[in-house]
Image (cartoon, rainbow, N blue to C red; front, side, top):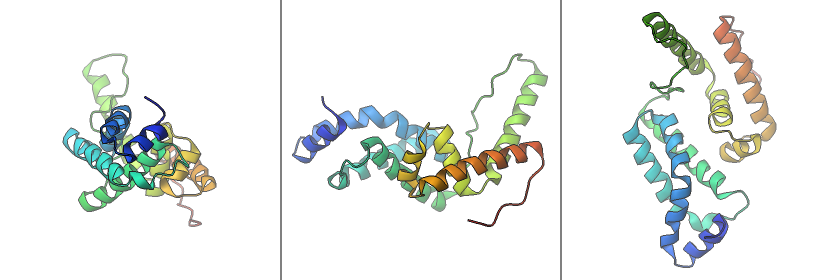
Length: 184
């Protein structure tokens, strides 16, 4: 078909069936976001449907100032935050996350499980504002500008949060946690 913006214009003019093209194009990315929030297939699938439904209902508000994907991801981000606050705190790494291994012996498996546990705990100790920016940057490969657009956090602050999150994570993993700065 055409660009996302052209498809949206067609949908708004009554060709609603074309919305399926946008769903097909972005469903995997939104589902991946759902997995990051909920860590299970059922909730991630429900989340994906809800994001696309909300986006369809609000499609008339899309002005094209950012890409459709950024706009859609923003809807998903805020919906995920809202659902998690109602349900439970999020866990940053899914249970089935795999750390590559060289050998498959019991000792290696135990070491991998321990490493994953330590990493999960360290990520959970990060302030939420840092963890969110870090995950959007590394997990979803978003630019600082996209993160800023999605979270409503100024771009300079996003950069600072990613830097501080990496630094704090390094300290946490090294076992030398520094005090949290109280400047934000």
